[in-house]
Length: 197
Picture 1 (cartoon, rainbow, N blue to C red):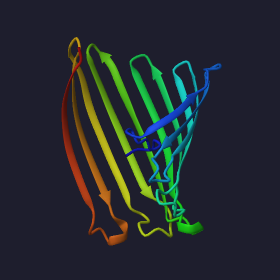
Picture 2: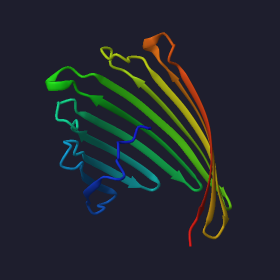
Picture 3: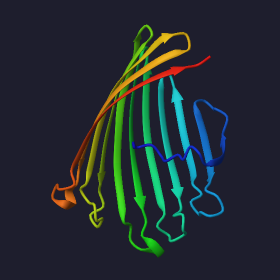
Picture 4: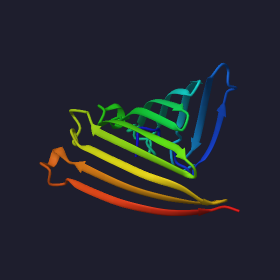
């Protein structure tokens, strides 16, 4: 979870990206959820990049699978800048769920994420990624619930075609609507080895 728009990696899609005109591009995609579902996502994305700076704005419309009208709409602003071996990024997104049959919205989750990546050491990449998410809709049953997560990682090129990834993530969930009785924390350590030939 982050501020980025949803992407169901295993679903069939068709998309188009315009030519790059002075740094500007338009991207559109349609996701087919299959004949048994109405959740055919439609996404649009506008991007601009120049001299290491990248800016993007995207929207995604996702109808509820059963056609009840409880559709999801997402918007996202993203910024990134690369200077030499350092890349920094910032993104803010909103995820709104509509009520069924034209009813009032039931959820409005606001999420920001930001991070940095450094690749100035030969064969090594270091990064940090921070996510902060909160239910903002006052009428929501979950208003005030928050999620905070921080990940730090190291990428290491062991040899040609062999890379190692180490990542430590600390996450904290605060359930405001239950007086804290459903609060939760999670610490994870990931070690991965990738081999390509």
